[in-house]
Length: 402
Image (cartoon, rainbow, N blue to C red; front, side, top):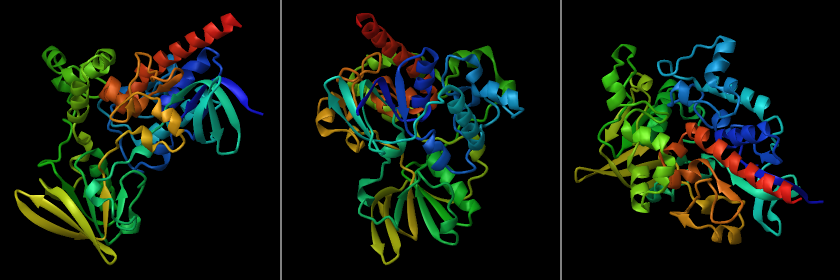
């Protein structure tokens, strides 16, 4: 038997859980699939601190008591909106509480197939169940979109991996590891490697590893509030506008939006990591390729016109994520072909609906439409209530007709 529901949510990260919390609060007919916060619980460095401030590290719910701040206060956990970094362990515990409290009907099955059907969409789960849904929301996380430098993709998994998924690096203890990148993921991995006795070095195109400025409670002034207003994705007017005017961002020309996505909020780490980083750094090095030599690898780089060869036992690419609909293995090719896209991410309406009626996308897949805000969990506070309102409006119309 094929079951039917009004809305199916694929993904149980910050965006999926937040949308489900809003839909659950109004009694919507929905189902949500996936393991809660898998990327955060299973694939982030164990001792990591969140890059986002405390006030920007909430999952979204209509209940004002659902914030990290309230959760910490109730449990006596040290917290500050900006001055105290949020440990990953605290955030994971908070998010698990949020899921059990606001999304108790989460189903851990994975969606293995998504295609069009006469009543909307048909989904197949990894337990063999099939269901139809009038609406589907793609709230998938970053795990599908790991980005590796093209010049290195011929290396074996023994020699090359992505930073995503490395909770600890003890298996490389005593070995030489090169970490590519200068952003938060690269710095986190390098510090973790140091703690695990790894001979580690950073290799980056950037000429400087940059860190956020440490917050200074005594430096707050009306002038700074005007010139560098605070936002969920960082200080400054550009970040403030990206956080508070995503609909305006959506109306900008394609070239402007893509340029802003690539250039704004470049690689930076949290201020609290600066004193921890001791790894050797090869900065200003452009990666040209690599070659395997037995069980070791030689990285080939270019710096100021000079070529360099750096030998290591393993390379970890902390080179970010690139959203791409083609990398979602469960999506039917015919359905994918109907989605109007920009650089292989869906073009979305103000309500996050794709060009296929009833199919929505949130989170990283929405970044090329709504801007950098969608790359951060704080973006769920904007997206979740809007998508929920749209879905409830459609559900109400169907009920009235019935």
